[in-house]
Image 1 (cartoon, rainbow, N blue to C red):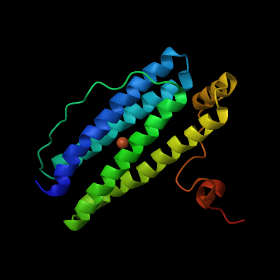
Image 2: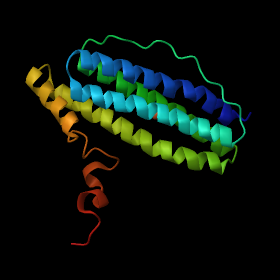
Image 3: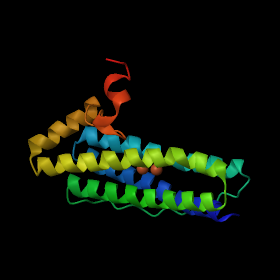
Length: 182
Ligand SMILES: [Fe+2]
Ligand SMILES: [Fe+2]
């Protein structure tokens, strides 16, 4: 096993743990009737499992042994929605760091198949961190206003809250104007 495939095997734990934690968060939010936030977290939980599957597919295709990790029971209580999102942001930054590390190892080994696969994850992590930062800022603005929290919850349900949060944000010309000449 090369060092980058060993690192991918270790990385699987982070993706599965994130999936499990987001599921716990989805439950916590649902218990508080924050249905929009809760379904966002449920989707994220599914997404993280998908990320683990992408890495597993890479390992299988590369004829490397997959070592499935033990997943610990996730945290189940948070002081506030903001504290919960602090945790989301912290987890995503840890995942980004691990992916950057795998990338560096793959480059050192000159493995282009690995770096091509990892390019998708680099973009994905940029998006994930942008989203978490955006929601955190909104929660900071909301302070502890229940009305503001309910509005954010509704925007999650409508799909409008994060509609313009993506890599490049408002500065993405193609996203803003469809790339058409004016
Ligand atoms: Fe992920
Ligand atoms: Fe993620």
